[in-house]
Length: 64
Image 1 (cartoon, rainbow, N blue to C red):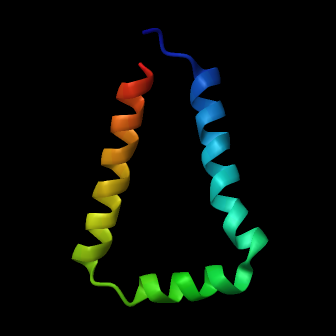
Image 2: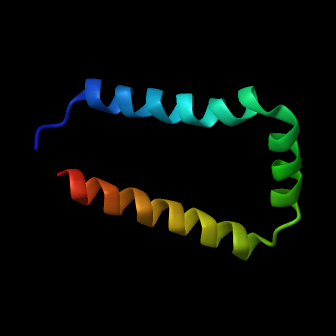
Image 3: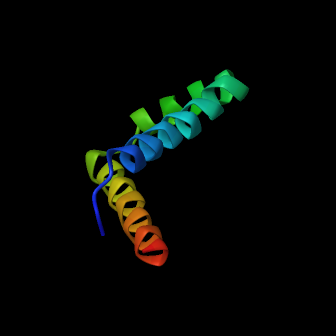
């Protein structure tokens, strides 16, 4: 597969769009969710990060 900056920039743009949707649609719920995340232990946050990375890698493997 050939590396393309266009694809990388489109992926980054989609991430920013999806990340911005929830705070734009429901800022109060987003704030409450963020406060709950702050209460989690570091290990719990790392676990969610690992699961997000794993899901992303899995989806990429399905696409490629």
